[in-house]
Image (tube, rainbow, N blue to C red; front, side, top):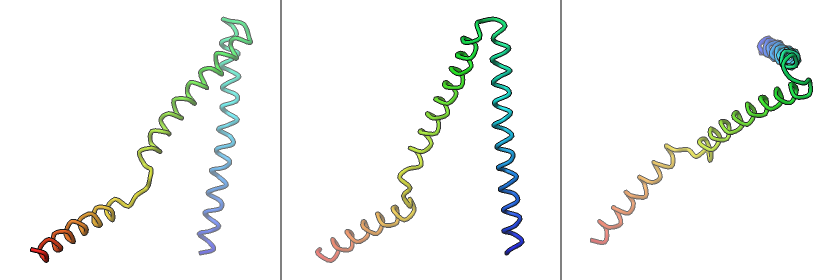
Length: 100
């Protein structure tokens, strides 16, 4: 168990390192995009355009995420709910038979 825990820790550390390097690469790519765009427009406008593209992408991802979260909530046990409904129907039927 201790060996698995150690491996898990090393794996999590590697994922953290990969995430950090990806964030640094995104910063470098952002700078490259701004510099490339700055050859056609003013520097401030190039930075604004890149930021607007990022905001549009973030908005799209947020809407997508919101849709998925709404579809998954509330997390009801669907099979248990269906089983309880069936039990209620059967109990009502038994009650009607007992009265009749």
